[in-house]
Length: 449
Image (tube, rainbow, N blue to C red; front, side, top):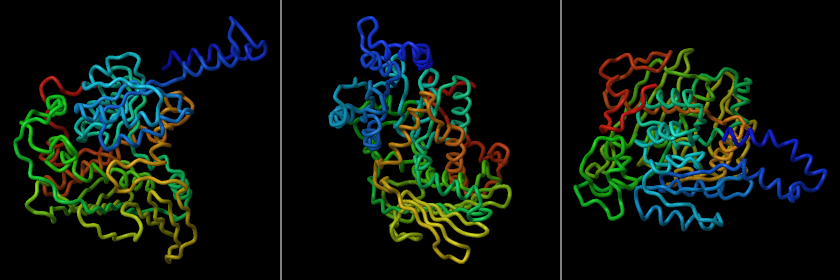
């Protein structure tokens, strides 16, 4: 991409000359402009063709994006075949289908990877892509554990390729507006944020040993994770709830979004203390082995607090009759309620003084999600790659917000509150720090950076 941008700059004067003369080497200025567009085009590959696929139709399909989808990659054959049919409604060409991300990354024609694979693949797929010279848009959470977040930040700096997490509310016009107002003092000094998520997820099967489904590359699905025998229903969405081998529980799956908004609003970095109350309350005999309900308190220097209220399987909307997820920011002179539908600004005594509703739509708890914020976020990354826009969120920001999700999970898994070093986010408890990283399958170890 650097070579292409340099080419554009070097030929800019020549293009202007063509516009005046009307032709050169038998080409019109309009024809030559098309060549310029081709050299500014970004060749994109998507790895992971499950429920997030629909989020990429619009940003990739729109002509103004000037991108070409060159690969659709997934370890499940039927996912690949379904994805190419679905994308056919949005693009007028056929991308290649591939089952092995390593072959995708070996193709020098690929400029950028969209990594929508399961959580345990997010960081490994991202660092493999950066090492192969690709820019990376990685879905949340950007890592499976805290150490992977540190590695991504280091890898990005080492290889110089842009990385951006799918924390799409960072590209919401309304959220950008109210966060800017908060930072300028509209509610005085912000001191606390309550982030919440409410869903009514149902019962999931108990995983049992079963034959590997037809068309699934189970070996590659596991990738960096230690090997186990296949169990029924694992490869599809329920890997989220079947333990820590692949998933990051609801905190990694969804809290990352609202915790990111809360941290952004309060302008805090690493916490100093984390405590949680979490357990499983619903469908006690099903296959869900993690907590499905969590209340967490995350304390930061300067007496600032983020609370997390996550209810995966109880659909009661505690904070809003209309929204199942959002963030409330409390300040010394007022309060802000913000979610994917817009924001409300209140005085200290609770009077509504301003409201702004989102002009578009973004999915709340619907599986797969997608919408205007995602489109804006992906387009922002395209333009950042071209050097025409500032990233809405760097991987440094994504990793810090994702760390909060990991810390509440570690507090739950160790069943103890955690004291944290606010300089780097590291846990002061040695036993808890054993969960800072993970065990990798031999040959899939992370790079040393």
